[in-house]
Length: 261
Image (cartoon, rainbow, N blue to C red; front, side):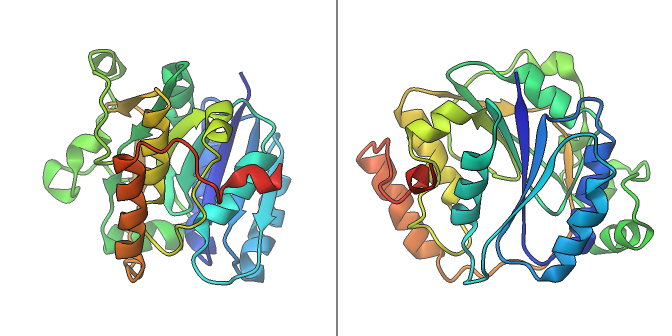
């Protein structure tokens, strides 16, 4: 099965570089790597050009003009462009455990999509990793990670998990699904602009077509680099779109990815 790793980013090349380094460190590489760039400046383009020669797989840079937070748009364009059967989606400010892609692939099942967790790193550790261009975290104690248990990888425990329909904890920074299912619901809803709820709304439509959601606990470990919070000025409007999808059991968004096919 061919898998595409989609990395969303916006004007954060120092963090994106650590993501790319952690992808190079994977036990299993994806078939293709796509950076979904929501309008970054030339620094991001230069970084991607620098790393292309380091990968033995295709590294694509999908970019559109900066006209505000349009993550749903660039993700739709990137996923439609992907030539793979399976999509793993992450953000451009995370460090992946070396078995991250391996874990997503081993847990992939038909009629199922997956959401994983993240470990939140503090500002001091984040700055140290970025300044040293290092993906290797020190062995920290329970008290040094904000959500320590998300850092524990015990694959055998994953097998005892149950499916659920709870949208809580749906995060696009650790998300995987079959591309055919994404196309069936017409991808991300581009009426959702600004930060918030785009992943939950897509997940709700996945559930409405009968897919099962699995929480990837004890596998697919990732570490989230510290950054300031995004503006939440569109959150209320995005919540209303999500509520409509849930209430009316919508399975298809009109303003989705079909225009790019």
